Amino acid sequence: MGIFSKLKKSFQQKSDSDRYLSGLDKSKRSFSERIRRLSLGFRGIDEEFLEELMVALLEADLGIKTAQKVVDEVENRALDRKLSSFDEISECLVEVLRDMYVSYEDEAMHINEQGVTVIYMVGVNGSGKTTTTAKLTKSFLDEGKKVVLAAADTFRAGAVDQLATWADRLGVDCIKGRENGDPSAVIVDAARFAKEHHADYLICDTAGRLQNKTNLMNELSKMRRVVEREIEGAPHEVWLVLDATTGQNGISQAKIFTETTNVTGIILTKLDGTAKGGIVIAIRDLLGLPVKYIGLGETLEDLRPFDIDSYLYGLCEGLVQHD
Ligand SMILES: Nc1nc2c(ncn2[C@@H]2O[C@H](COP(=O)(O)OP(=O)(O)OP(=O)(O)O)[C@@H](O)[C@H]2O)c(=O)[nH]1
Image 1 (spheres, rainbow, N blue to C red):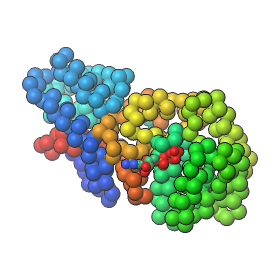
Image 2: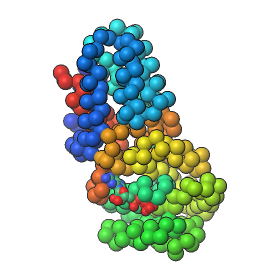
Image 3: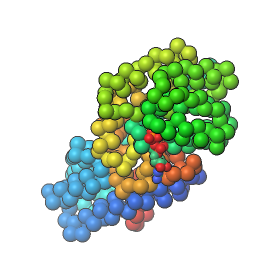
Image 4: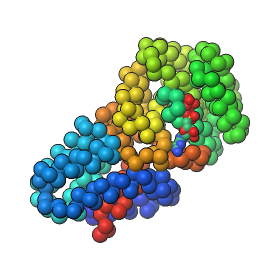
Protein backbone atom coordinates (compact mmCIF):
# COMPACT_ATOMS: atom_id res chain seq x y z
CA MET A 1 0.00 0.00 0.00
CA GLY A 2 1.40 3.43 -0.95
CA ILE A 3 1.93 6.19 1.61
CA PHE A 4 -1.03 8.13 0.30
CA SER A 5 -3.44 5.21 0.73
CA LYS A 6 -2.10 4.70 4.27
CA LEU A 7 -2.69 8.35 5.15
CA LYS A 8 -6.17 8.20 3.69
CA LYS A 9 -7.02 5.09 5.70
CA SER A 10 -5.71 6.52 8.94
CA PHE A 11 -7.51 9.80 8.19
CA GLN A 12 -10.84 8.07 7.60
CA GLN A 13 -10.56 6.22 10.91
CA LYS A 14 -10.48 9.45 12.93
CA SER A 15 -13.75 10.96 13.96
CA ASP A 16 -12.91 14.66 13.73
CA SER A 17 -10.74 14.50 10.65
CA ASP A 18 -13.07 16.57 8.45
CA ARG A 19 -12.12 19.68 10.39
CA TYR A 20 -8.55 19.11 9.24
CA LEU A 21 -9.66 19.23 5.63
CA SER A 22 -11.68 22.43 5.93
CA GLY A 23 -9.17 24.11 8.28
CA LEU A 24 -6.25 23.33 5.99
CA ASP A 25 -8.14 24.21 2.84
CA LYS A 26 -5.97 27.20 1.90
CA SER A 27 -2.73 25.29 2.40
CA LYS A 28 -4.10 22.26 0.65
CA ARG A 29 -5.20 24.13 -2.43
CA SER A 30 -1.96 25.97 -2.87
CA PHE A 31 0.37 23.09 -1.99
CA SER A 32 -1.38 20.41 -4.05
CA GLU A 33 -1.81 22.77 -6.99
CA ARG A 34 1.81 23.87 -6.97
CA ILE A 35 3.11 20.34 -6.84
CA ARG A 36 0.64 19.15 -9.46
CA ARG A 37 1.75 21.97 -11.72
CA LEU A 38 5.20 20.37 -11.72
CA SER A 39 3.73 17.44 -13.63
CA LEU A 40 3.37 19.66 -16.71
CA GLY A 41 6.40 18.98 -18.82
CA PHE A 42 7.75 16.48 -16.28
CA ARG A 43 10.59 14.48 -17.81
CA GLY A 44 11.96 12.78 -14.72
CA ILE A 45 14.18 13.86 -11.86
CA ASP A 46 16.39 16.47 -13.49
CA GLU A 47 17.82 19.77 -12.33
CA GLU A 48 14.87 21.77 -13.61
CA PHE A 49 12.38 19.60 -11.74
CA LEU A 50 14.37 19.78 -8.51
CA GLU A 51 14.58 23.56 -8.76
CA GLU A 52 10.84 23.84 -9.31
CA LEU A 53 10.20 21.51 -6.39
CA MET A 54 12.41 23.71 -4.22
CA VAL A 55 10.39 26.79 -5.19
CA ALA A 56 7.10 25.02 -4.43
CA LEU A 57 8.39 24.01 -0.99
CA LEU A 58 9.61 27.51 -0.24
CA GLU A 59 6.20 28.87 -1.19
CA ALA A 60 4.66 26.44 1.31
CA ASP A 61 6.97 28.02 3.94
CA LEU A 62 9.34 25.16 4.62
CA GLY A 63 12.23 27.61 4.72
CA ILE A 64 15.48 27.20 2.77
CA LYS A 65 17.26 24.70 5.03
CA THR A 66 14.34 22.33 5.40
CA ALA A 67 13.26 22.64 1.76
CA GLN A 68 16.79 21.79 0.62
CA LYS A 69 16.84 18.71 2.87
CA VAL A 70 13.51 17.56 1.44
CA VAL A 71 14.62 18.08 -2.15
CA ASP A 72 17.89 16.17 -1.56
CA GLU A 73 16.07 13.30 0.12
CA VAL A 74 13.44 13.07 -2.65
CA GLU A 75 16.23 13.00 -5.21
CA ASN A 76 18.16 10.27 -3.35
CA ARG A 77 15.14 8.06 -2.83
CA ALA A 78 13.88 8.54 -6.38
CA LEU A 79 17.26 7.59 -7.84
CA ASP A 80 17.72 4.66 -5.43
CA ARG A 81 14.33 3.22 -6.22
CA LYS A 82 14.45 4.19 -9.88
CA LEU A 83 11.16 6.07 -9.62
CA SER A 84 10.17 7.54 -12.93
CA SER A 85 6.51 8.57 -12.98
CA PHE A 86 5.28 11.84 -11.51
CA ASP A 87 2.81 10.06 -9.24
CA GLU A 88 5.57 7.92 -7.75
CA ILE A 89 7.64 10.99 -7.07
CA SER A 90 4.68 12.80 -5.46
CA GLU A 91 4.20 9.85 -3.12
CA CYS A 92 7.91 9.89 -2.39
CA LEU A 93 7.66 13.58 -1.46
CA VAL A 94 4.82 12.94 0.99
CA GLU A 95 6.77 10.04 2.48
CA VAL A 96 9.86 12.25 2.97
CA LEU A 97 7.76 14.94 4.70
CA ARG A 98 6.24 12.34 7.01
CA ASP A 99 9.59 10.71 7.83
CA MET A 100 11.03 14.09 8.63
CA TYR A 101 8.30 14.68 11.19
CA VAL A 102 8.34 11.25 12.82
CA SER A 103 12.12 11.00 13.00
CA TYR A 104 12.02 12.51 16.50
CA GLU A 105 10.79 10.60 19.53
CA ASP A 106 8.01 12.47 21.24
CA GLU A 107 7.34 12.24 24.92
CA ALA A 108 3.75 11.92 26.05
CA MET A 109 2.32 14.88 27.91
CA HIS A 110 3.80 15.15 31.43
CA ILE A 111 0.94 14.66 33.83
CA ASN A 112 1.32 15.22 37.57
CA GLU A 113 -0.30 12.06 38.94
CA GLN A 114 -0.05 13.43 42.50
CA GLY A 115 -1.93 16.66 41.95
CA VAL A 116 -2.22 19.67 39.71
CA THR A 117 -0.63 19.55 36.25
CA VAL A 118 0.71 23.02 35.47
CA ILE A 119 0.89 24.26 31.88
CA TYR A 120 2.60 27.53 30.92
CA MET A 121 1.42 29.19 27.74
CA VAL A 122 4.16 31.38 26.29
CA GLY A 123 4.35 33.36 23.06
CA VAL A 124 4.28 36.90 21.71
CA ASN A 125 1.17 39.04 22.06
CA GLY A 126 -1.32 38.46 19.30
CA SER A 127 -0.18 34.90 18.59
CA GLY A 128 -3.47 33.58 19.93
CA LYS A 129 -2.28 32.67 23.43
CA THR A 130 -5.38 33.79 25.29
CA THR A 131 -7.86 32.29 22.84
CA THR A 132 -5.87 29.04 22.79
CA THR A 133 -5.87 28.93 26.59
CA ALA A 134 -9.68 29.12 26.44
CA LYS A 135 -9.85 26.41 23.77
CA LEU A 136 -7.60 24.11 25.80
CA THR A 137 -9.70 24.71 28.89
CA LYS A 138 -12.77 23.69 26.95
CA SER A 139 -11.15 20.46 25.77
CA PHE A 140 -10.01 19.53 29.32
CA LEU A 141 -13.50 20.33 30.67
CA ASP A 142 -14.96 18.07 27.98
CA GLU A 143 -12.76 15.28 29.38
CA GLY A 144 -14.36 15.90 32.79
CA LYS A 145 -11.28 17.61 34.28
CA LYS A 146 -11.22 20.52 36.69
CA VAL A 147 -9.32 23.54 35.36
CA VAL A 148 -8.06 26.75 36.99
CA LEU A 149 -6.65 29.64 34.96
CA ALA A 150 -3.95 32.14 35.89
CA ALA A 151 -4.03 35.48 34.07
CA ALA A 152 -0.32 36.19 34.39
CA ASP A 153 -0.08 38.32 31.25
CA THR A 154 -0.11 41.45 33.37
CA PHE A 155 1.82 43.46 30.81
CA ARG A 156 -0.72 43.95 28.05
CA ALA A 157 -3.66 46.13 28.98
CA GLY A 158 -6.80 44.09 28.56
CA ALA A 159 -5.18 40.65 28.51
CA VAL A 160 -6.28 39.85 32.07
CA ASP A 161 -9.88 40.91 31.38
CA GLN A 162 -9.91 38.95 28.13
CA LEU A 163 -8.97 35.75 29.94
CA ALA A 164 -11.35 36.47 32.82
CA THR A 165 -14.20 36.84 30.32
CA TRP A 166 -13.37 33.46 28.81
CA ALA A 167 -13.20 31.95 32.31
CA ASP A 168 -16.68 33.27 33.12
CA ARG A 169 -18.04 31.87 29.90
CA LEU A 170 -16.46 28.49 30.56
CA GLY A 171 -17.43 28.48 34.23
CA VAL A 172 -13.89 28.08 35.62
CA ASP A 173 -11.95 30.06 38.24
CA CYS A 174 -9.44 32.58 37.00
CA ILE A 175 -6.81 34.05 39.31
CA LYS A 176 -6.01 37.56 38.21
CA GLY A 177 -3.15 39.97 38.65
CA ARG A 178 -3.14 43.71 38.46
CA GLU A 179 -2.04 45.35 35.22
CA ASN A 180 1.75 45.74 35.34
CA GLY A 181 1.79 43.68 38.56
CA ASP A 182 4.25 40.84 39.15
CA PRO A 183 3.17 37.83 37.05
CA SER A 184 5.01 35.47 39.41
CA ALA A 185 2.81 36.61 42.28
CA VAL A 186 -0.28 35.68 40.24
CA ILE A 187 1.20 32.26 39.53
CA VAL A 188 1.86 31.58 43.21
CA ASP A 189 -1.70 32.59 44.14
CA ALA A 190 -3.10 30.47 41.33
CA ALA A 191 -0.97 27.43 42.27
CA ARG A 192 -2.18 27.61 45.87
CA PHE A 193 -5.78 28.06 44.79
CA ALA A 194 -5.54 25.13 42.34
CA LYS A 195 -4.09 22.85 45.04
CA GLU A 196 -6.71 23.82 47.60
CA HIS A 197 -9.50 23.25 45.11
CA HIS A 198 -8.10 19.96 43.82
CA ALA A 199 -7.83 21.09 40.22
CA ASP A 200 -6.48 18.72 37.59
CA TYR A 201 -4.95 21.49 35.48
CA LEU A 202 -3.64 24.98 36.07
CA ILE A 203 -3.13 26.82 32.78
CA CYS A 204 -1.07 30.00 33.06
CA ASP A 205 -1.38 32.65 30.36
CA THR A 206 2.00 34.37 30.60
CA ALA A 207 3.42 37.58 29.16
CA GLY A 208 4.88 37.62 25.69
CA ARG A 209 7.39 40.42 25.61
CA LEU A 210 10.07 39.70 23.08
CA GLN A 211 11.57 43.15 22.72
CA ASN A 212 14.02 42.51 25.51
CA LYS A 213 15.34 38.99 25.70
CA THR A 214 16.99 39.44 29.10
CA ASN A 215 13.73 40.63 30.66
CA LEU A 216 11.81 37.81 29.10
CA MET A 217 14.36 35.30 30.34
CA ASN A 218 14.33 36.73 33.86
CA GLU A 219 10.56 36.81 33.96
CA LEU A 220 10.14 33.26 32.71
CA SER A 221 12.82 31.84 34.98
CA LYS A 222 11.27 33.58 37.98
CA MET A 223 7.89 32.13 37.05
CA ARG A 224 9.47 28.67 36.93
CA ARG A 225 11.21 29.05 40.30
CA VAL A 226 8.13 30.22 42.15
CA VAL A 227 5.81 27.53 40.83
CA GLU A 228 8.31 24.73 41.52
CA ARG A 229 8.16 25.61 45.22
CA GLU A 230 4.38 25.26 45.20
CA ILE A 231 3.85 22.18 43.04
CA GLU A 232 6.47 19.50 42.50
CA GLY A 233 7.79 19.24 38.96
CA ALA A 234 5.85 22.32 37.79
CA PRO A 235 5.56 23.64 35.17
CA HIS A 236 4.96 20.18 33.71
CA GLU A 237 4.48 21.54 30.19
CA VAL A 238 5.54 24.81 28.56
CA TRP A 239 3.72 25.33 25.30
CA LEU A 240 4.82 27.97 22.86
CA VAL A 241 1.92 29.48 20.93
CA LEU A 242 2.94 30.49 17.41
CA ASP A 243 0.91 32.24 14.75
CA ALA A 244 1.27 30.17 11.55
CA THR A 245 0.58 33.21 9.39
CA THR A 246 3.86 34.81 10.51
CA GLY A 247 5.77 32.05 8.72
CA GLN A 248 9.54 32.01 8.99
CA ASN A 249 9.38 34.99 11.32
CA GLY A 250 7.54 32.76 13.76
CA ILE A 251 10.48 30.37 13.69
CA SER A 252 12.89 33.14 14.74
CA GLN A 253 10.52 34.01 17.60
CA ALA A 254 10.34 30.36 18.53
CA LYS A 255 14.13 30.16 18.70
CA ILE A 256 14.25 33.03 21.18
CA PHE A 257 11.69 31.34 23.41
CA THR A 258 13.41 27.96 23.24
CA GLU A 259 16.67 29.64 24.24
CA THR A 260 15.04 31.36 27.20
CA THR A 261 12.91 28.59 28.62
CA ASN A 262 12.46 24.87 28.35
CA VAL A 263 9.64 24.73 25.79
CA THR A 264 8.07 21.25 25.62
CA GLY A 265 5.75 21.73 22.66
CA ILE A 266 4.31 24.08 20.08
CA ILE A 267 0.73 25.14 19.50
CA LEU A 268 0.37 26.47 15.99
CA THR A 269 -2.58 28.84 15.64
CA LYS A 270 -4.40 30.30 12.63
CA LEU A 271 -3.46 27.51 10.24
CA ASP A 272 -6.88 28.09 8.69
CA GLY A 273 -5.80 31.59 7.71
CA THR A 274 -2.67 30.71 5.78
CA ALA A 275 -1.66 28.84 2.66
CA LYS A 276 1.71 28.15 4.22
CA GLY A 277 1.01 24.93 6.09
CA GLY A 278 4.54 23.65 5.43
CA ILE A 279 5.62 25.59 8.52
CA VAL A 280 4.81 22.50 10.62
CA ILE A 281 7.61 20.56 8.94
CA ALA A 282 10.05 23.49 9.24
CA ILE A 283 9.34 23.85 12.97
CA ARG A 284 9.98 20.20 13.50
CA ASP A 285 13.14 20.18 11.46
CA LEU A 286 14.67 23.34 12.90
CA LEU A 287 13.51 23.13 16.51
CA GLY A 288 12.93 19.42 16.98
CA LEU A 289 9.83 20.25 19.03
CA PRO A 290 6.53 18.44 18.67
CA VAL A 291 3.46 20.33 17.49
CA LYS A 292 0.95 19.49 20.22
CA TYR A 293 -2.15 21.24 18.90
CA ILE A 294 -3.17 23.28 15.89
CA GLY A 295 -5.70 26.10 15.73
CA LEU A 296 -8.05 25.83 12.78
CA GLY A 297 -10.48 28.65 13.51
CA GLU A 298 -11.75 31.12 16.09
CA THR A 299 -14.37 29.09 17.95
CA LEU A 300 -13.71 27.10 21.11
CA GLU A 301 -13.99 23.84 19.17
CA ASP A 302 -11.32 24.80 16.66
CA LEU A 303 -8.29 23.45 18.49
CA ARG A 304 -7.20 19.98 17.43
CA PRO A 305 -4.54 17.67 18.85
CA PHE A 306 -1.92 17.52 16.14
CA ASP A 307 -1.81 14.34 14.11
CA ILE A 308 0.82 14.14 11.39
CA ASP A 309 -1.16 11.74 9.18
CA SER A 310 -4.36 13.81 9.17
CA TYR A 311 -2.31 16.93 8.65
CA LEU A 312 -0.41 15.52 5.67
CA TYR A 313 -3.61 14.12 4.22
CA GLY A 314 -5.22 17.55 4.63
CA LEU A 315 -2.25 19.20 2.95
CA CYS A 316 -1.84 16.80 0.07
CA GLU A 317 -5.38 15.63 -0.64
CA GLY A 318 -5.83 15.74 -4.36
CA LEU A 319 -2.14 15.39 -5.06
CA VAL A 320 -2.13 11.70 -5.88
CA GLN A 321 -5.27 11.25 -7.87
CA HIS A 322 -5.37 7.55 -8.58
CA ASP A 323 -5.92 6.49 -4.94
N1 LIG B 1 -8.64 32.15 12.37
C1 LIG B 1 -8.10 31.91 13.55
N2 LIG B 1 -8.00 32.91 14.45
C2 LIG B 1 -7.44 32.66 15.65
C3 LIG B 1 -6.94 31.36 15.99
N3 LIG B 1 -6.44 31.44 17.25
C4 LIG B 1 -6.59 32.72 17.67
N4 LIG B 1 -7.20 33.46 16.71
C5 LIG B 1 -7.53 34.89 16.75
O1 LIG B 1 -6.34 35.65 16.89
C6 LIG B 1 -6.58 36.86 17.59
C7 LIG B 1 -5.53 37.04 18.70
O2 LIG B 1 -5.76 36.08 19.68
P1 LIG B 1 -5.49 36.34 21.24
O3 LIG B 1 -5.85 35.09 21.92
O4 LIG B 1 -6.10 37.60 21.69
O5 LIG B 1 -3.92 36.51 21.19
P2 LIG B 1 -2.89 36.59 22.38
O6 LIG B 1 -1.65 35.91 21.95
O7 LIG B 1 -3.46 36.20 23.67
O8 LIG B 1 -2.60 38.06 22.35
P3 LIG B 1 -2.57 38.99 23.56
O9 LIG B 1 -3.91 38.85 24.20
O10 LIG B 1 -2.33 40.28 22.88
O11 LIG B 1 -1.46 38.51 24.38
C8 LIG B 1 -8.01 36.76 18.06
O12 LIG B 1 -8.83 37.51 17.20
C9 LIG B 1 -8.35 35.26 17.94
O13 LIG B 1 -9.72 35.03 17.72
C10 LIG B 1 -7.06 30.31 15.00
O14 LIG B 1 -6.63 29.17 15.18
N5 LIG B 1 -7.65 30.65 13.81
